[in-house]
Image (tube, rainbow, N blue to C red; front, side):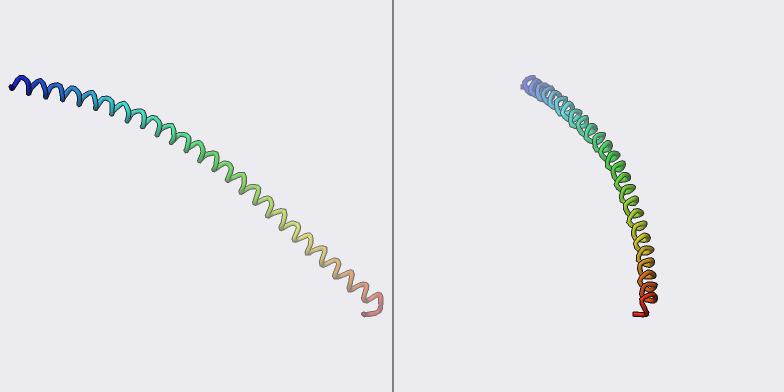
Length: 94
């Protein structure tokens, strides 16, 4: 009876070791996939950072252009107002 019990325990131990080996292999595959995903995420983050900087530069240039146009419009508005005043003076004060 002890021999059968020992054989059964030996067989169970062997099967458990095989099962653990299979589980270890599956974990290795999962870890490799996670590593690949992490590398892809880092690449995507770098691309997003570059794109973000480009967008910011474009936004900054647009704002600078708008501010220049505002200044030009103010200057032109002032000139037009001066001309209107001069025309009133020339026409006789209306």
